Image (tube, rainbow, N blue to C red):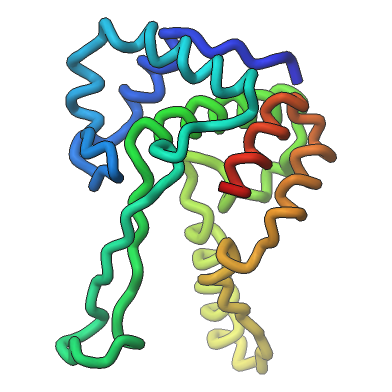
Length: 189
């Protein structure tokens, strides 16, 4: 992967793709305002590049707010709450830029298989397997055959991946060492 140089164009593109009113973190900033204040894109690009080169971020960028959302009406039981964590908008913008660069690297080097739709942006990762299951089910029913199938629930897969493995995957895919070191440092924060 080529070394990453963050520009105002990168910031503008990341901000353009972001939803306007997602819940902000400690910075209290919505992407809507970053879209309108284009003059700050060059300043943010410079600050992001400095953070990347120094391999660290100020704690304001990595400190998140967690909201507890009740799963049902019984709000007295603490196990009935779902924690939703909101990182700062500035951090979301930076990670969006880095993600876009990594994805561009993976696509240009054909690292990911076409079948890995669940990992690709803008794809409906589970739609294709569900359609295949439906067709197979209809064929089995029509032919009065027996079918045995197993489905694995991976809804918590991302919560269980250790950071050490994520770092190793970035290394295996030959992601720029500056980005790897930076993300490793952010994971520690």
